[in-house]
Each structure stands twice: as C-alpha cells, then as structure tokens.
Image (cartoon, rainbow, N blue to C red; front, side):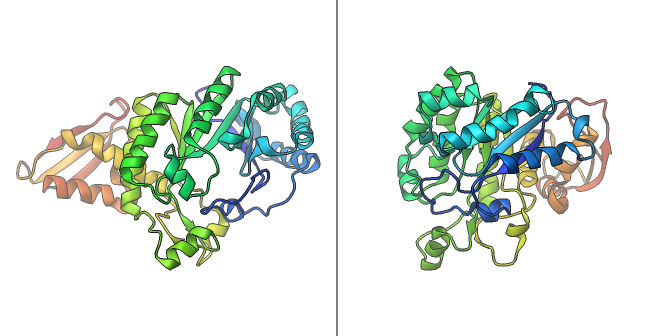
Length: 342
C-alpha cells in the first residue's frame, strides 16, 4: 500500500449486525447517520456520488470503508450484495481497496474466506480492551481471547488488521489499559485507533453516570493515557491512525455529551503532548536563560504551539524563560529542534 494517506469514502451502517447494544454505544450520534438496513442500491449511489466530487482522482489510493455495526455478522446474502456492488468499482480502478469493521467474535474460517473472496483487504476489530473484566462490565459479549483468535485468523488469510481500543471503559484504569496496549503489541496488528470513552446521552453509561456508579476520564487524564499508548504502539512499529471521535454534527448538539474527555481537537492534544515530551531534554533548565528561540521544521510548529498556545505556556513554565520566537527551519530533520538562548 502506498505511503500517501488513502482517500476514504465511508459507508456507515450503524448497529447493523450487532447482537446487542454495548453500554457506551450510540452509533447514530457518532456518525450522524440513522440506523437502517444496508442495501446495494444505496452503496452504489454513495460511490457514484463520491467519484463525482472535485479532487477525487487526485489521490492515487482510494478506499471504500464500511464503518459502524458488525459487518461480518450481516446476513451472507447482504454481504454478497453490497460487496458485489463494490466489485466493479474495484475492477475498473475507481477504488483500490475495501475495509470493514466488525466484532472479534463475529469471525470464523468461513467468514474470513468469504470476505477475502469478495475483495475486502482490511478488517478492523472492535476490541476495545484486552481485559476480560472490563469487557464484561461494558457488556461487550466477547473476550480478549476472541480478539487474539480473530487477529491470527485474519493474518493467516492475508488481511491487513486494525484494532480499535477504548480507554476509560467501566472497570478500566491507566494500568489496565497499559496492559491492554502491551497485549495488542504482541498481536502485531497493522494499525490501531484510540477512542477514549465519551458518555453519550441516552446510553446505559449515561444512566450509570447519573447514578454515580461510573466516572468518566477527565480530559487531561485521557490525553496522558493516549499519549503514552501512542508512544508504545508506534515505537513497536504499529501506527495509530485515529485518536478520538470525529466531531459529527450530532455530537456537537448541546446536551448530547454527558461526560468524558470530549474535545474536537483531541487527536491534536495528544500529538502535541507527545511532541512536548520529545523536546523536553533539549530545553534549558530553570534559571539558565531569560529567553529562548526555537527552530523547528515548519510542519512541527502547530505541535509545539499546542492547542491555543498551551505548548508555548508549558515550555515557558518548564524553562522559566520567555519564548521569544518560533522559527521555521526545514533544513532540520523531521522532529528536529535547535534551541537558542539569551
């Protein structure tokens, strides 16, 4: 697969194929899409609309992604119908790949063979945690062993494998989630997504918040957990391709989010935290200088500044010096930094 990020055309199938609803889940709000049976005609319409969009063909790699629901639990007739509609778009080169999301316990040998035969290249697993107590309390209905089996099965059939994780579930802790990350690293998936739990109105988890039996992660706590997790995963060669929920129109509606670390720029907060950690060793100690200027590659400026310049304030607090200038210097290597003191 090319290094360039693919253009992804999403097809949302909220709750379809799911055996039940987990305590945290409301996919209609997350996707701003109503639940309803998927069918080939609608999929064809979406793909036709997508390729008429300006700039569609400017990206070399274009992918169809079925998000939400449990794709492998759909009736086989439905799977064959929708992927049958996709097939001509793949054959003519309009799209180059297909990905689906599914539960770890929805897969077996027959389903894996079926998905492979019908052109699916990437399968993302809604793992959420590798702690069975956390999974039970969240009413997931599957185990950590189900995830292990699914990853092994998918890899054997040549799929690219993604794992979706949710820090902050009922019964979870920073220590338990760190253990989850270590277990996932041992499984060697091709990618990971991190979705810290956000409590949505109308869910069972929202009722638990009202009754005082569940406490969501605070924003800073979630940032720290996700930053540490990203570092561990990416140092192991596993890219983290998404951090935090997309800011859908439904989530922006007042009152929809009851509790939890919701922030429209959550991923940027985490990446900025990682960046700040990476440059700390190059900063002067308190009392060593009154002012500093920092030269970095231009693309790193937003990470250094942080959300609303929180990164600058953090550097000034750590060094006890004022920040005089941030200078773009693209002669420096990616992640490089040069600090000048006064």
